[in-house]
Image 1 (cartoon, chains in turn red, yellow):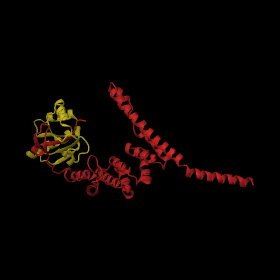
Image 2: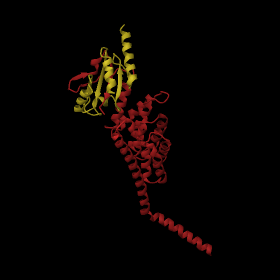
Image 3: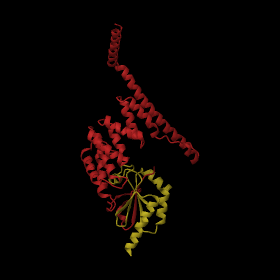
Image 4: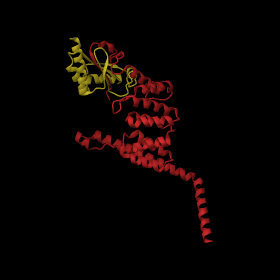
Length: 257
Length: 101
């Protein structure tokens, strides 16, 4: 009898638990809020550390003093962002935390784990567009397989556009052994130029960015005759690059910043 | 960057060599910099920001970007800096001298 009572109690307890779970919406929301608050707090902590560093650096009176300052590397925050993501896998803060690591950290084990988690759980998220963009400057060994997998999984137009463009950029750069995947890169840029005029690139559309890549691949390679430049100097006087034919010329794209 | 460019231009002033800039600053700022840094070489003014027509056409995504052309206008080096830039230019001047003989 006792035993039955106990079981009954347990059962009702369990049922209560179940009921609590379904009724729990407000409570759950609070928890979700807590995760994103934790995320916001981490981001703020990092940004404050960076701001403090730059403030101290500009106040430093000598190079020696400046060298003593430690630059807050994003990588040193990665573990905490990753823990947050792992503890709240179904919370939107998890995705934010993973995207933060992927777009702020250049290396480290956490970054590698993050990239794997993003592919596994978030390939269909629109946020993957910025992650794909950040992969442009990664090593081919990491970036190429990751972007290829993303292209298979992604459903968002913007994500597909950035992943295609980023893969092109990664393939056109030299890998460690000096190899470049120019032919495939050219095809990828053609695809972006044709289909992604509605996606924002850097300052213009992604299609325009890809057209720039195609122009570079086709006209600005070592061994090709440089296309002429016609323009004017600071005083409005017209001149051309071809005015210097017969001389060795260094062209320097520069700005005072 | 500026001191090295100045010394390159100074060192090669009697050679068939030219440094040509493509500048992405606002015009007023460019005027100031040219004067302050004593830049004797010419720059195209590319419309005042990094999305100017020349930089866009040449797909420049990072600054500075450097191309080295031989006397026939053929692109021979890309993004050589400092010592490597000196060597690139010297090798092309030498090549040109040998071709002329």
